Image (tube, rainbow, N blue to C red; front, side, top):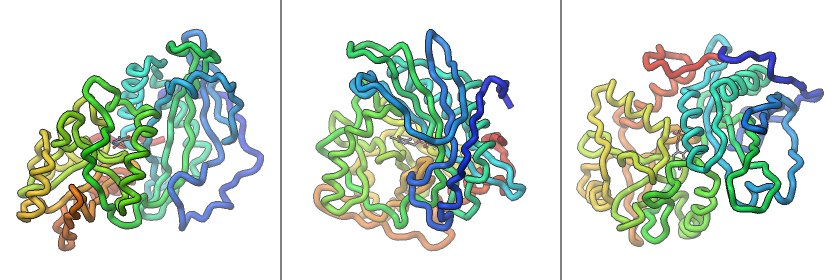
Length: 356
Ligand SMILES: *Cc1c(COP(=O)(O)O)cnc(C)c1O
């Protein structure tokens, strides 16, 4: 415990909605747990920390974040171990990344006290909402938005930080078909691609919709200059297995610094799998599929964990990725090990698990 819980005000719901939720059928992001954590940034500090029933906010039509987009978020997951204790995965990394996003968006940063203290308070009161079935978890959404009531384009002086949670099952029911995007871009050098800011996702929706109309599930973004090198995919980093090596685009200011990505790379190294973080060209990947040297291509992110692609579409042609024989997939091996760490089934040798 890192915080003085006395400074958080609690108002417990009089009516829990947990009986209304079918925990055997959990669509992503539709069921919200009973409570939320809220804090406001005013006069240079975080005040009014409270855990209250999940409910609507009352907002001014002139709220600056609605106009100019000072809005950032995080995504993380909690699990229960066999003893029923609630476990978070690398929450301090989410705090650090949220603060990096906040600095880029000229927003207030959060202290460990507010962020971890808020998470702990919320997860304790809503511990019953953490699912236990294999493949399910409690998705946690911390986010922050500007609350000045002012129409000038300048950084807001006040912010709201909120955390709510959703019990979720698996994200994709079958391996997604992805399309290499060679017209639109997600991020350019010097831009905000590395920040988990709301606008990045708004900008991606139109090209993603076009890909979906063409029969794909998601996009593979390429670099803004030449459309030659892979960046990432939707809300996932991307990885490939080429000649038995785990290959992934190096991080830059145009890619989100995924915590799942980092965890996978650390696990791979510990399993003596060779890892390469470098530029990965579309040509190399398509050529690798054709020659058989590329054996796996997958997305990595908190929502999906690890998501093997079934098809990569490029310049009007679909390149199929064969399913690996059972037990031979590097992605599946790493994913299973990571899941065992997250759920407390194996030793946390990396020091990633945070017990609530
Ligand atoms: C959140 C996100 C990721 C994955 O990050 P994780 O920390 O692994 O969840 C990757 N790319 C984008 C664009 C994202 O928004």
